[in-house]
Structures are given as C-alpha cells and as structure tokens.
Amino acid sequence: MRSTVEARTGTGDTGRWLHGVLREADLGLLSGLPGMTGEPVRPVRAAGLVAVVSAVPLTEYGEEALHRNLEDLAWLERVARAHHRVVDALAGAGAVVPARLATVHHDDGRVAASLTERRAELAALLDRLTGRGEWGVKGYVVPGAVPQAEETAGPGGAGAAYLRRRRAQLTAREDVQRNAAAAAAAVHEALSRHAVAARRHAPQDRRLSGAPTAMALNGAYLVDATAAAGFAGLVETLGARHPELRLELTGPWPPYSFVAERPAEPARVREPAW
Image 1 (tube, one colour):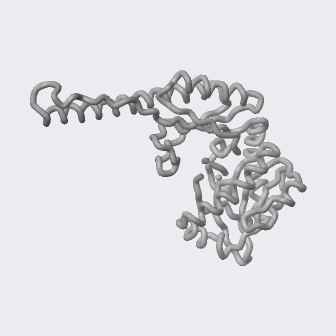
Image 2: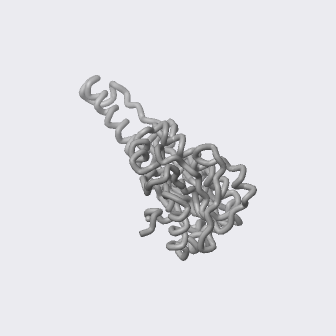
Image 3: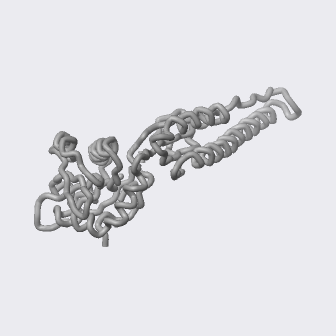
C-alpha cells in the first residue's frame, strides 16, 4: 500500500484520519469498529456523503510527525493494518472510496468541505464501485528443468564443457523468463476482458511476496459481484492453459486500485486511494 503525507495541522491537538467515503454509514457497524488509536471510528456527513474518520493526536499524525513516522517500517505496517481493517469492514457493507494512507485533516470542517467540493467526483466513483469488488491475480514463474551438458561433450576438454553447460543454463533461464512474460501478458489480457476495469501493477520483489520464485504478473481486476464465480473459474482455466505460471487469486478487496490518486485536500490506501 502506498503512503503519502497530506496533513494539515493547526492549533488543535487532534486531527481526523480519513478512512473512506460512502453514501451511508451503518452507525451500529461504526460504533464497534476500532480506528487508528483503538477508539471507534465515526461519521462526518456533508453533501449527501459520509466520511468515516478516526480522531488522532497530531503529535503523532500531524504533518511533521507523519514525515518522520512514515520512514519507520514498523510504525507504517501497524497503521496500514489499522487503516485497512476499517476500509475492509466498510467495503463489506457496501461501496466505499478508500482514502489514501495517511490522509489527515485538521478538523471535521475540513473533512466536510472536502466532501462538498468533490461531491460530483465521489458520487460518480461510488456509482462505479457499487456491486463490484477488486480481485488480485498474481502469477509466479514455474521454472523448467535446466539442461545439463556432459563435461566430455564436444571438443576442448573439461573447461569448454563447463562453458557450454553454463551457456545452456543461461539460455534455459532466459527462455523461462521470456515464456513467463508472454504467459503473464496473455493471462492479463484474458482477465481484463472479463472485468469492468483492470490494472497491472509492478511485480513484487521476492522478499516482499515471500514466494520461492519471481512474480511475473501482479494484476488487479474490478469485477461485478455477479461475475465473481465466473472470474474465479477463468483464473483456474488460464492456470491450466499456461503452466509457465502459478496463478494465485485473492479477494475481494476494497477497490484501492480503482480510485483516482490525487490529494485528499482539494484545492488531492495489497495495494490506491483519494
């Protein structure tokens, strides 16, 4: 999940961390939903829309503090999980426009002003997202067997045989990567035709994905809820058709990949928000 600093500090000591925007809020859901500091989130209403916010201390979430804390990976992971937990709960109850991570307004008035200023854009986004979810498809390379050359094969003795063997290994690896890239492109194209919208993100580093092989496809797909079963079936079919890749389907997720990225204060949240 990306992060950004969009805080506006002032004389108060408490800011408003924005989780997301929806058309209506279930007060029962919100009353039991812990926010960034463990206290329940709450709604801010304006222009027929509802922003769900957490009250946060500006000593930790103000502009200068955010610039510093966003460099702390442990802190970033903790707040990203807390933010996503709220957004995920909201998405389970209906369409939501997720806020970009670390979007902090000074007070309720600023939140309401943002809703009013961007009402048309946010309403159009909610219309587009209603009844749809984001599905992720990752494709991991399935290496083929690396040919082994006999050391005595061909002229030149053991040294030449070693060079031939290394050349064959490098060629085989290049073939695997080339085939995986072609398969990833074909899979993404096929899935895109069965989705309302699609995004192809940069593959995750192996240290982040935790997978034993490289990632060739990191796709996100906005799919109608009524078409989700068919989409999952297509992923299974494509996996059998392209053995060069091991496909992994996850979701549905909040639609992080399908919300325009611009600052939350108009004048502007795995992985993607407003």
